[in-house]
Image 1 (tube, one colour):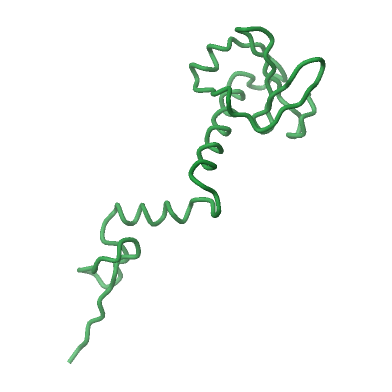
Image 2: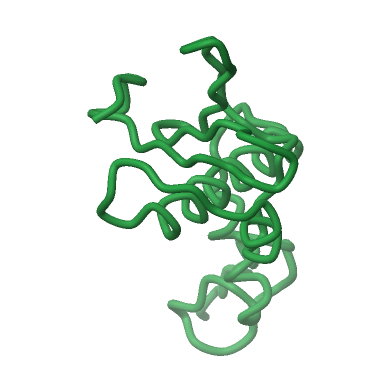
Length: 128
């Protein structure tokens, strides 16, 4: 007489019918399990959302500066591309003004509607 061992879904714990090598009951459980594993350990959801916002801000700044070292753009252009001015990684007082950084790319507010984007060398805040 054969005894069958009940197999359980790795995500929700439901009994798995069907194939003997089945690990998850459906695609939703499989995706949920792998998404949980990919999350950075020890970070709250708020910290992850701040990381995503900083990364997006950096991508927006890089998209406008391209291969140049500096450029001046309209504030509205950055906002239309999804830039959020409240999120920056650090700031530095240089040349009589404040340079805000999104990781290794900086920007300085020139006037109400103009922003100067600065690409730093090797991410050290040293401008090229």
